[in-house]
Length: 297
Image (cartoon, one colour):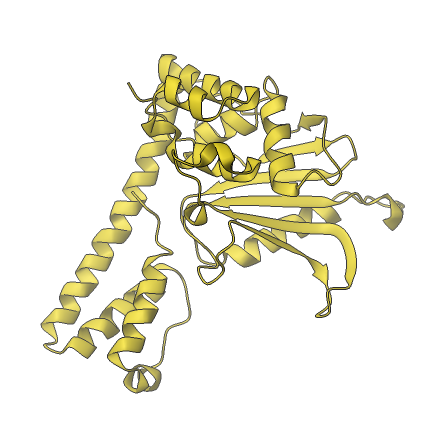
């Protein structure tokens, strides 16, 4: 029987990568993303999950915030969709973690690097084929100003790992495989395909969520929120398609889809003049690119 717990649901994701009881899992994942330069051997989780205290309290599920032995602040988050302004939010949050370290009288030399890792089910950069995209402060020729601000994207839809080749893939591909497929596989299959102890420990966290009534209830609540949002967006898109069809023209139908998608994703609206100048093929390409940024079920 399959595990049935999706690691990409934010509650499960934080239980796996943000539990002080399982630092080896966090360390292994961080080294897989960052390439082990320098190799992390110790982390402290700075914001573990705080379970609700009463029935009226809501569980606060945040990103994973940790510190390694080099003093770097490490933020890890999971995104099942690409919300409007994500690029700016990632930049703002990393910069805030950097700036907020200083208090009155502190020296700039005391600032520690900030590394932000965003795992995405939907791609932010669909035109880039790589699973891992690394952003730092460099000039156009590649000269590095500083490593103090890093933003790493792991776009799971680009993973090449399958049940047939995952044993031959690198550690990051293995984690991408785990995140995408763990809920559909049996415990025995996961242990056979990913025999490293860190994956076995991560599997144990998913098993705990599946078997502990309170944990499973919290997980199901977060999963429902995720699915409700996906259904809301899909319903709005379907309504927009129908409105376009009623205009009686294929071009009008595509225009309606494009405008609605831009609204749902919080993007600037294409002007009437720009729409009129686009061919049906160009409209179809834009629609396909925007649909790929909507959250999955």
